[in-house]
Amino acid sequence: MTLPPAGAPPVAAPPVERRPRRCFVETWGCQMNELDSQRMSGLLMEQGILPTRDPKEADLILLNSCSVREKAAQKAYSRLGEYRRLKRRRPELLIGFCGCVAQQEGEKALSRIPDLDFVLGPGRVGELPDILAARRRGQRLVATGFPDARRRRYAFDSLSRQTSYKGMVTIIEGCNKKCTFCIVPQTRGPEQSRPLADVLAEVRHLLDYGFVEIELLGQTVNHWRDPESGADFAVLLDRVARLDGLRRLRFVTSYPRDFTPEMVAQIGRHETICPYLHLPVQSGSDRMLKLMGRGYDVATYRRLVAELRAARPGIAVSTDLIVGFPGERDEDFAATLRLVEEVRFDSLFAFKYSPRPGTAAPRLKLPPVAEAVASERLQTLLARQSAIQHEINRGLVGASFEVLVTGWGKEPGSLVGRTPCHRVVHFTPAAGRAVVPGEMTRVRIERALPHSLLAAPLAA
Ligand code: SAH
Ligand code: F3S
Image (cartoon, rainbow, N blue to C red; front, side, top):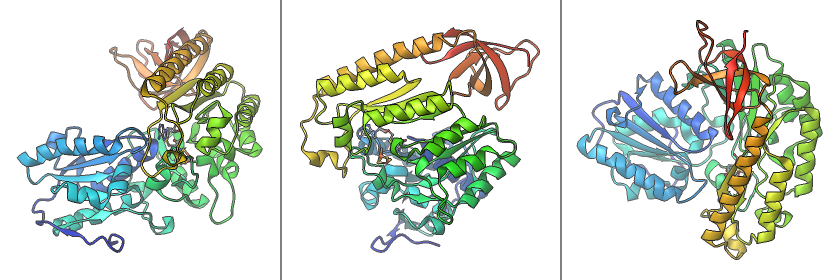
């Protein structure tokens, strides 16, 4: 088995007498964390440890934490505290601290929480069975750090996928960019691309099992390069988009500067690539983009969006924005609002800047933005965006779409689905027509809300 890196001796604890039977996994954060949780659940199921939705029923609890925003460590410790209360009543309960906060806290977490059973970073997910075996023998391990991707275990057929129609496939791990606000390069390590052959094998495997939607994952997904041939993301898109059985191909998250004309062309070329792209811009002010270390300017971003829209008419574009980054003045925020007005994003995630330990931004010694100002900017931005989205959605009334049904709605008999451009649609199938999650069906949009659409079914 792989032991923790040198300098981290296992901490002794009483051996565990009973093997866990039920596991509860709590997942915070991005799709990569979601996929890591699916991997951990899958590895546990291979050992006969089944998932449960109720932490009180579990004898193993994994907290898969996220450290991107606000008081991440504090929140994680407070949740671990709640689980420890369960452990006081049931001492055989095992608690594992996983994800990005665990990677950062490492040894500290074990000493801070005497009854924590192990710490497992995102680069070591495949070692969960070994960590549990060691715990049974009486060792509390801290498995953090980033072994070379070629040495990591990644058994994609033992993943416990959450649905039977959408499969997430990691193509690139970690991040080599240095955005000054972002903690991800520290918590997910240096960038490592998976070989083309591995990616294609995993996608083929999913399609053979009847999955129809594939989502390629990476912090900078379009920076992927085949470590063997040097082929880039445009080649990968082309290869995956042509596979038999694939209905929808999506990928997240694209880095604006890493987009090439050939990638744009592929999006225009393949029907199976969803007309939806998440393209975080972070700010509409060149001065802020520079301070954030993003490596592009607003004009370049605008041009890219125009090229995407020309290549694929109707493509939906969403973005991430940070308000209140240190040094952000009224005119910078005004520039962000202008960009939002101009581009008319189909959806938008806006965050108040929160300083993360070990990132470069705090060292820039920029004047902080007052909390009240940042909150007001966030509200202004969200209100404006909500109005824009409502207008865009109203323009879709009367249009028909093929939706992929993703689940049941709140009303009895109603369903929720996604249009190819990833909009949420609520509808009720015609009487006598059984439609289930994972199926595709046609609907006509009848009403628009700011964040979703209401539709009526169309005859197939
Ligand atoms: N490449 C990844 C980045 C992960 S962080 C991706 O785009 O998914 C996701 C988003 O969180 C970023 O785009 C950014 O808008 C926001 N974010 C990251 N660090 C932040 C911080 N310190 N404060 C506020 N928002 C932050
Ligand atoms: Fe973070 Fe920038 Fe990488 S936002 S994940 S450092 S691309």
